[in-house]
Image (spheres, rainbow, N blue to C red):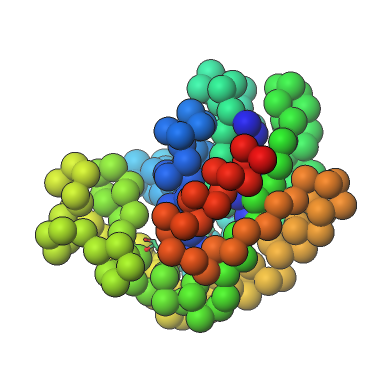
Length: 215
Ligand code: ADP
Ligand code: AMP
């Protein structure tokens, strides 16, 4: 299966991808995670990305698209199927993705649109924490770790993303409405779009999605 996950920041794309990855044996490709890895390693790409990420803006299309193209060309694991999370985020990226996937002979099967209300995504983003070691996702109220600040899965340290603060979240929401939301129609017109109610509790969203994809 070759899937794109669409939805506002905090809709639960990463959580759903992690919950489906093993079930369907799919690769989870998160451009946000890839860019944060570049930042952590202090690469030129990471330094450029940092400026945009910390203000809540988008990293320029050429940079992110090149990074994704290189992933599809060089990582054999993408051949077994994938879930793209956080890409595409602009119409340009969506058009470029079509070209990249045509070149590697892996056209999309479907695009899952995670619908979640503004109040829900705000509550999710402000309470999110992430494991520094394995990337597991937690939420202070909805999915707390057993021990404060410690990952249940690997014992790693949990941290709050620098861009999960109120001011940056506001920018990210505006960017989403202006640049990313229009892609929903792009995929609807191609007959690829499937929508799901992402306001529900995580396991319910996961079970519903499994049925939808098997359907
Ligand atoms: P996205 O990848 O869309 O930005 P995440 O998967 O990182 O979103 O989820 C954002 C936050 O919301 C995380 O703290 C996560 O634990 C929590 N979360 C994700 N899905 C749900 C859900 N269905 N119900 C409640 N909380 C959720
Ligand atoms: P995410 O982890 O998906 O919430 O992404 C975090 C940040 O990384 C975003 O706010 C953007 O600044 C940047 N980013 C991730 N994916 C993309 C993309 N496809 N295009 C541009 N910027 C991106």
